[in-house]
Length: 371
Ligand SMILES: Cc1cc2nc3c(=O)[nH]c(=O)nc-3n(C[C@H](O)[C@H](O)[C@H](O)COP(=O)(O)OP(=O)(O)OC[C@H]3O[C@@H](n4cnc5c(N)ncnc54)[C@H](O)[C@@H]3O)c2cc1C
Image 1 (cartoon, rainbow, N blue to C red):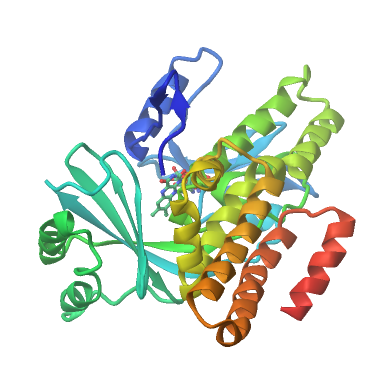
Image 2: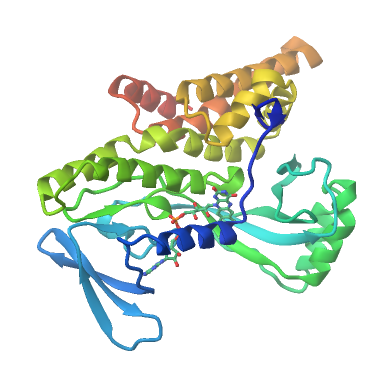
């Protein structure tokens, strides 16, 4: 899928997470109105129902200290310790990503991410330098993959042939080297509880499958929306105004994150369904708007939920058309129906998690019961 054109040239940006964050931190350190304290928050300080600050320990310190504020921004990431104070989380562990690094090799499309799908768990491969690539392999289930004695053999048997030829030797070398990283993959729809004095955002509030690399876009969307609301407040001791700004953030943040969330978890459902997986591949392979618009949603550039839905439905319809034209009509009717049913079954719960308006909610709930 080509990058969008800017001034006649394909244009896309890749960031190394660590370097990107360090540069943001460097920038923050130059701001005169910001004081940085490095430490670990141990408790949120609560007075009745209001959060008034935090207890924390500085790096290497033995004693706790306290900080008080009109607003505490809680953003402690995927393994959040404080999310239960500020939301009602219904967290689903989808499985784990196993990470490997491919060195000194090329993939078919330089400077592009690769999603490898087939009769094996999906793999995502993306460049981290001009000669090395990160591979993430999905492992479904409650427990991380067991990195025992036979694990390397299993990886080679299961995935070596699925790798593009140009990367196979590097894959074998990475498996032999055995520097594996595992990360849990969660689906956590946002379900905040409004508490005076604090706000929850980022992965602590809401997570989706990292297959599409959407988490950072969602976190930045939260930062932007919350700061736009807070910017208008002149006096932070005006708790009513502060509360309203947080409330507005919770009510509207989905407008910036819903397409990222639906696409990530929707695509995760699609890659495990052989018919839909093929339909998706054939659909985006048509190029033009089929590729460009889906890619712009994936990149977080386009946040039009209707457009995403149209593509999702059109993809399932295209899949059924392909089936019907490839085989005898009578044989495929049941399979085609089940493909549409599967597509609806994947997308409906995701739409229900993203604040549908009341009319749509009733329809989606009814659909959810049927599929
Ligand atoms: C394998 C994988 C690949 C990914 N790839 C991409 C990608 O390509 N693109 C993308 O956009 N997103 C990607 N993501 C998702 C992205 O990394 C996250 O969505 C994003 O980092 C969330 O930001 P956050 O600030 O909410 O949480 P985090 O980035 O986790 O930051 C939370 C911070 O809080 C700190 N913290 C935690 N507890 C405390 C405490 N008690 N006191 C003080 N500090 C604390 C942590 O040390 C951490 O620095 C990926 C995720 C995974 C797992």
